Length: 291
Image (spheres, rainbow, N blue to C red):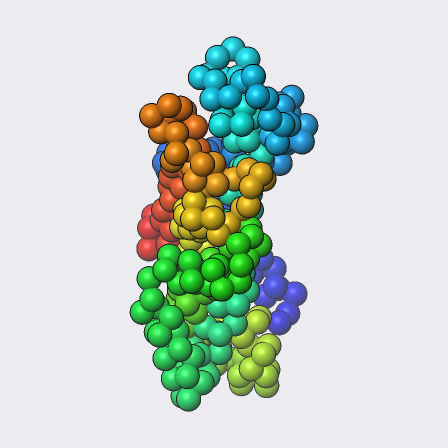
């Protein structure tokens, strides 16, 4: 590719990114979703610096205190500050969502690339295995894998990531089948590039947009799945806080201390809504048919 062609390609990419950003800024729901995610991410990252109590410190004189000036979100069954546990629990919940999706992408996209690009028996084998996994409900599969691996946050993330992997295999395969018939792919073959170079330099960059959108939406699903696994005792283990494990404990005190369940539930709801709003906005912004 000549220097002039490279310059034209760079300018075209810059114009495309500018159009995507402009469309995203015009979407108030996407901006709201991004603001929600940014807020909770900042809380999770800055948790060690925030002036809150130790999330593991129990106080036998403050058991199940209602929200007040000292404990803004009240205390739990051991007298621990719920606000502090909410802040530190954000780390576990957001980490579970992002790392689980990263595992799903890293394991799923290569298989989808191979199936869509080569076709034939490679496609048949990968597609049939993928369909077998997709026949199982996502959460049921995640629970089964987490129970097999053992209760811990890391095992829960692996279980969620592997359960979400078939979605990315199917999505990538479909996108590759569409892209590989384009003229620039034929041109790459004509100049003698091997299959690996074509897949990594020409196919993969042109299917990133739908993968990003799917990843954003899947993070929301992964956060709910982590909360569900923690609720069942298969995720974050006590006394370390996570929103799901807090709900697991709170279910025993719904009448005596409803605030123990209210605040983790609201946090999970807001984060899931944020990722869904941002994912919908990205899908519209990255769609070339949308003006």
